[in-house]
Image (cartoon, rainbow, N blue to C red; front, side, top):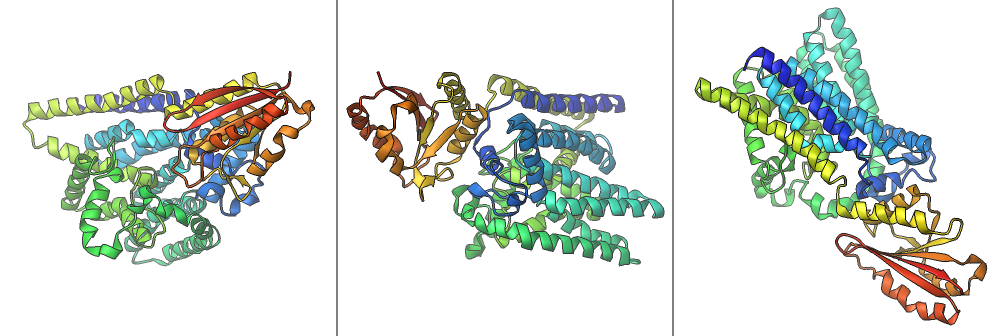
Length: 513
């Protein structure tokens, strides 16, 4: 493929990726459960409150939380505003990935690595969410680009690049947890690179280590301990090495790397990313044979420190793309190089046809991704249905009249986490629709129908969760109280909102003739 075509293709993939990202953002997907869990921590809290462990089992770096809290306050809880930092991080990451590929590899390997990144679903999806994963990718690319600049710089320029890398890494301590793994991999390489005069590097590493230790002890560990129960969830149990049955470790490692860990441009669990991993492995072998072993360490070294953290149950190893998205630059780059190595084994005509066919396939991932988002502008149908309910309630409830919520309780307050992300999602959507809803416990029901008629009409939202919890569904209990309403002379209209899976919302509008 000619240099001119490669250059044109690079700009086409760059433009298409940014178009897909901005298109997904403009479609304003309804907030979903994991986002809602984060957003619930921003209501009625101060910035310093976010230093304490978060509600709903959330774990996120402090400066990222403060940035989202700032957007929440500034926009009065707008989801689009809170997604904007991730979108900007995603756009910056795309440009930095292009720069990284072009500096790390010659053509056409650099182009194929970048094309795979642009066609990948998960980095783009997480760039339009109220979660810190897009920031994790951004800081990994900032560190990798600065490391390449540092190694290519002269004596005077290397001081500036070194300080810039130290500054970004120090900021990453409080903005991106996985940046610790990237920094840990860069540290030994920097010492080896400047082994004849290591004192300035040792000083920088000492400053960084002190800042990282302080953050971990004062912030990260308390947050992780408060959310330790997450490790018992089925999706995260397998994300930690089975040290109790050490003989299964080889299979576990193979399954991890052939699963979500390598899901670029797409993939899945249970060896769903086997082809991607094979290309990554082939690219890594080619790097090794060409003598680029130090650079290979920079790319893959963070995985070793991730694995050590997983052995101590501090950070999952795979399990989902989001927690390992900091490896996207390395994996896409190695995949691109592995792909070119494979194609170069073919006769010249077949190589050109193979390149064109693979690029067409990758571009189809991009185009179909945008088309799919336009046709289905929501993560799940339940998200959209809950949003429709919130909009209906805002349009129909009687202005200043009371709206009460009734759902499963725990310790006298609504157990929003026990009810799952669907409940948190619905609660945030109702608040965004500016419906003043108050959530009641069971004891309130004893006096509900003796309320003064001045409170009528009264709306009661009865939420039935979609989790397999030990607590009973609330709707049957609430229905048992309706004879009391009839005895008090109240009448009611019930409206049902069945939602995907087992979730349901029932709205009762009570009045008196």
